[in-house]
Length: 91
Image 1 (cartoon, rainbow, N blue to C red):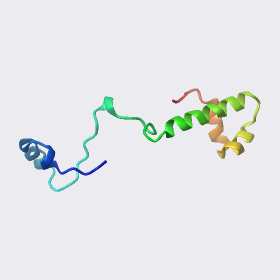
Image 2 (cartoon, helix red, strand yellow):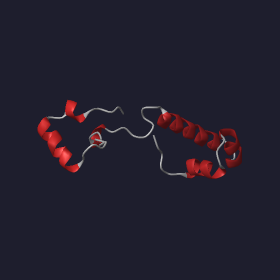
Image 3 (tube, rainbow, N blue to C red):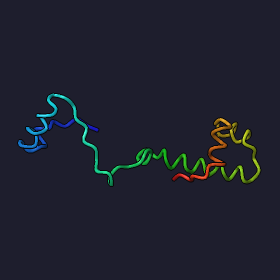
Image 4 (tube, rainbow, N blue to C red):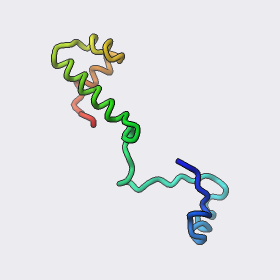
């Protein structure tokens, strides 16, 4: 997110109205609700974790134990259990 000087982008009347509430500070203006991206969508982190979790589920279904999966994926046994037994599939 880059800093933009408000008097370069806002109409003068709107700028004066905003200045009634906030002067000389930084103001964050979020995107509209429908345009926001979820965590990890830009970086690929979300898809990476989704693929990793699916791989963990497949390995568990093929017979690997929670302990073996924890060692293989460098996660705690509790994290593996949440992935394997969790009913909420993320993606």
